[in-house]
Image (tube, rainbow, N blue to C red; front, side, top):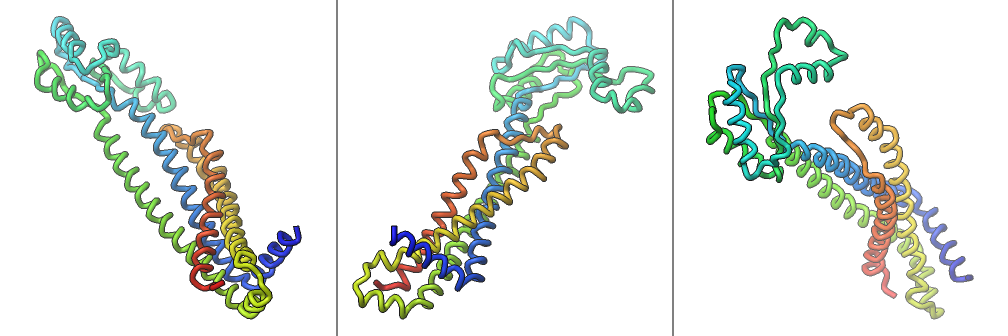
Length: 299
């Protein structure tokens, strides 16, 4: 118990003597872990959005000309159902009237978009889904090249291109975030190391006396190691508080106000993220201390 009290008092005394450097180290640790938290939360939000959007990726809309005869429509439908990559239970015909009613319902708060229409401009169409979203391109090609009465098909649309672009943007965001976190973590370790080096230099005479009276190596090292761990731990706590504030004041409001993007945060994410941030802060502090002790404290 006396040793623990001694280590704690020595750690606190060293932090007070090097307060400016300690605050700088804590701030850099907080920034690096805070960026990590933002990257993880952003990754989770965009990942959930992409997963939600991917449910739409496998959907294809086939628009028919108004000149399409009933027997031609039936032949096109039979072909769509027969495509191996298409789920036959998800092939749905939507006539012009149904499409217009859905349009009015979707924009019921903007009646100026439809109340002055003198005729229905929307086409008859088929909505179909592929068994695997990756087969959208294959199905679009099949319909474009082999569908009967191809001249009656005015357009074929799918969301695969937009999702692919979104995934590319998301990958770049993730890569930049990971590189930034790694760089700041290295800077944090080095800055913690500098504070420990200064503490070692300030107590070099005391360390020499302790060695002369027979103090063990770890008895001398422990206060310095705890100092680095404390800086990392405090930095992680600051990062958690800032991350929580960003989540409550910014991310939650974005989710509420941009519901059409279907952004969301997994409910269990923070329960995993915040403990990992604490462990990460302790590891950064311990590595910084270990580097300084191994290089500048010969005991």
